[in-house]
Length: 337
Image 1 (cartoon, helix red, strand yellow):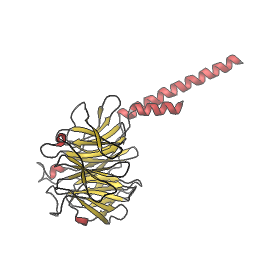
Image 2 (cartoon, rainbow, N blue to C red):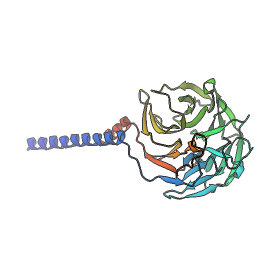
Image 3 (tube, one colour):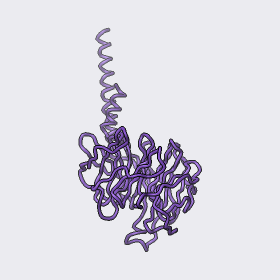
Image 4 (tube, rainbow, N blue to C red):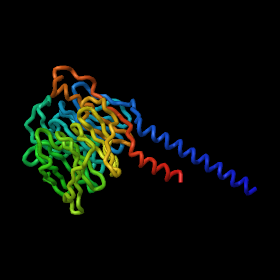
């Protein structure tokens, strides 16, 4: 009787062992062969999108570089609706945008790269719109001008903005009413477009420099001041990095303007993994669940050699991303144990 019981237990352990091996194999396949989802979204003709963000309820907001407006895709809807009309609140070309669910604000960078259908000499500004209605709330002018590019929030809901023309990151403190330079460094200087995408995770700001392919990290001290400025060593320079978004403290997604969506992982050594390399001038990325939404801006038809050639359909590509395989394995083993 005792022998039969031991035999049954050993058989059960063997089944569990092989089941674990099978699940590890499935995770391996999923990680190394990410799924290309087919639920892409489409924008209107001549839209030339630049910024994208997703609110917690699943609404997707997209800003237009050329049309000076913002549209919204309601959760699970395929058709967009006008959310912020052209030139509302002095809005020029819409660059980075960010849904601030805590304060019910849609933040938008307003700059003038010279391609808008509505020429404007309005000051470069960070704009605030009501996240539910799109009504204008406030406008925060860039001190000494510049180029408002991308936006992130820290855990205390302070707003950080990159300036592509000046070597600085600006901050809008939640207790103040104007933008101030938070961190300035000569490493941000360069020809043309410099600082671009920005994101926050684990009390650190990450930002990319477009013309050099560099990635930087700046810590935030308890008093809110910048500390521990670091240039992160990468296996290779990023190829014209644009938007960047934190998955968690060890993983980032970065859009490489030359055509790629890339996963950056910080486990022991920094690694880069290209998830898609067939995109047409991707600019920014937003994350909802396990799906990354990437804009195909087709800026070659606006600035480059193809500007006299009509662009194709403006598509928002959905990509199923996966966190680090080590993270997945740890979660699986913890679950099985």
